[in-house]
Image 1 (tube, rainbow over the protein chains, first blue to last red):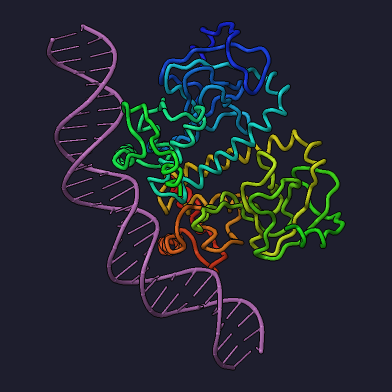
Image 2 (cartoon, rainbow over the protein chains, first blue to last red; image 1 turned 90 degrees about the vertical axis):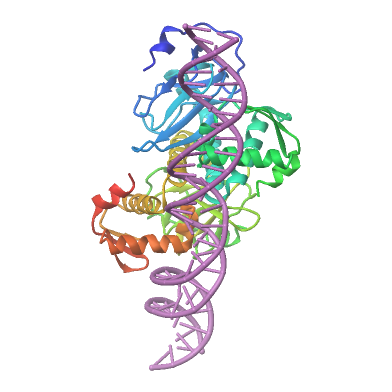
Length: 209
Length: 209
DNA sequence: GGGGCACTTTGATTCAAATCAAGTGCTCGC
DNA sequence: GCGAGCACTTGATTTGAATCAAAGTGCCCC
């Protein structure tokens, strides 16, 4: 399961340490590569160095819910219990700083803050998915991603329309239609399908409700 | 904001301590009473002694998402940051064990486990709301509640259809129709609107996927 | 440079749940 | 015991998003 990561560990001394400091290794993952699977033992946690990661859950019939995306600087991989309930995979070419079990125990104070933030994010996401319409969901998603990328006007989407749809509880077609509509109203502009310029940030923010 | 709680604190020595031990007080809340509001300072956390609590968020236009219900023995009230992002209110006549800030600091290890469990619950809930149809959502809700009440066949609902709808991202009408349909298939039986007998637990479980 | 493939967009139709609109029945206060 | 009000149920209709279907578009590899 961890074969790729374990054979390609390397020393790293250039990775930003925004949340947790200490000794670690950096592992590269190709786009689409699984980081952990449902049922795997939890014995590591991760910080995205470059690239992007999705954490998701599957229903037996294949329906998928992405519960979170993780961008550079963000931590993931800690869960309740001893085994993972979710899958994690690299969306694009990704490098991850990997922390071992010992490190997690030493740093339980930081982990608490991260767990509380994760809970808050998931609960905010519940409101979006449970009570907002398609346009509101996409607008909220774009704003969230924009802020997490530093708040500039240009937004790079590391994930596909399918990933976005599975995150927002929609279909790719609906996501695409909403994007087209926002483009039509000149709220956003597309350089290409994965690069969005936010033309009217206030209008976009107003759409979240 | 906490007036009712603060004037009615009383020593308690009979409340079960399933998660955290230590000195505390017990406060009674009438049905519908607010426990904390969005924006309130976070300086306490709570354990339900008797009754039930809902934690929810509101959109400016009044749409509401209940993010969690809390039954006897369960803790709530800890969030990221220094101020609440959610509202909490007693659903029925409720008694809460209240823990102060000092206690939360001393018990950060237990809090971590609770935060991780809370995150897992919220993420599981995301899958239900994002990717399951009305029947699946209601079935999952009934099973979850049943297990949290000890797993017997008879289920007492402390909350209204509106509360359930706001938890599941549905309307009261839809919740009611699903309940009627499950009753029609003899998967469940209703003693009254708030008391459900699970007649075919396996069939109910099969409906969740 | 061209073929194939994956991703995205667009269009037509269907469908599940929301909305709108009455009932029904239970609880509580008088 | 009786009426008012609220919670819940049921029915008719609408609607937003899903589904089904078919083009674009760009990219990689040969």
